[in-house]
Length: 293
Image 1 (cartoon, rainbow, N blue to C red):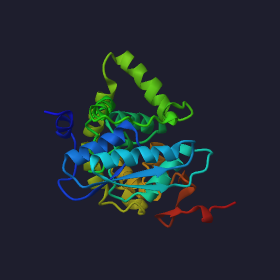
Image 2 (cartoon, one colour; image 1 turned 120 degrees about the horizontal axis):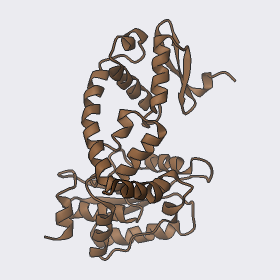
Image 3 (cartoon, rainbow, N blue to C red; image 1 turned 180 degrees about the vertical axis):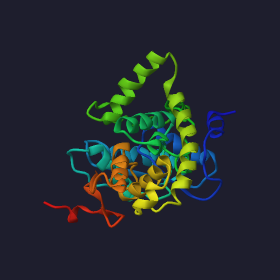
Image 4 (tube, rainbow, N blue to C red; image 1 turned 60 degrees about the horizontal axis):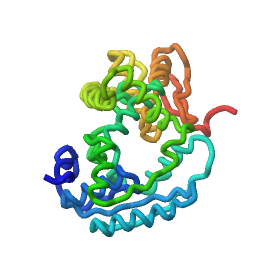
């Protein structure tokens, strides 16, 4: 059994149809393309050039070569991202704005563990601690980063090494290179595997609570007060997540909205310049343009 066949058994690719793969040129995204083709899927590799560092155009050339070798279609798009604060988040938003909604990404179990820890550090609630969902867009969540590296080597592909992946200015890199190794040492075990399993377990619990929360109108203060707190939180979290461009709100923001519903506050900030306010028992989201000052 070849390595690709072995790894495919732990992946979640669509059964048929053409797929679009986001391919940066790193090991994970190249493995995504290799495995999509090994699964017999017609694949298009899309490379997004953020233009943030010298040599980014050469990465597109490398991805084009890999796509040709694997029998995949290739195209490249350019995202306009200016240097400055929140660079990682802004680059991610710009990238996904150019990709189709059903794009496949090469996130692995290692990325999942990092995401869980980052959400924990942000103070996210249950939804954030589930990390990335197995929603069909991340078929490699059952694989490890070492396995994607090995698959690239087995196929004679040299991954692009992005220097920003070791830059300590980015919190994810510190989690990857400092926090997780320390946790492994303290726990005397592979913490990535533990965190990935925990995310799957919490996802099942979150889905149950979310299904109950979906029955509640999050703009009705009385309806929120009538629910068990976990269900009210789920209703608010789903409402805010839509307003916050899909980002899970932190637990503190959800609690502040509950305080508004309970009458302990009239309004509260919830992030991205938005706030929730209450009038005559109804909650509403106010965009930045309506805020005073």
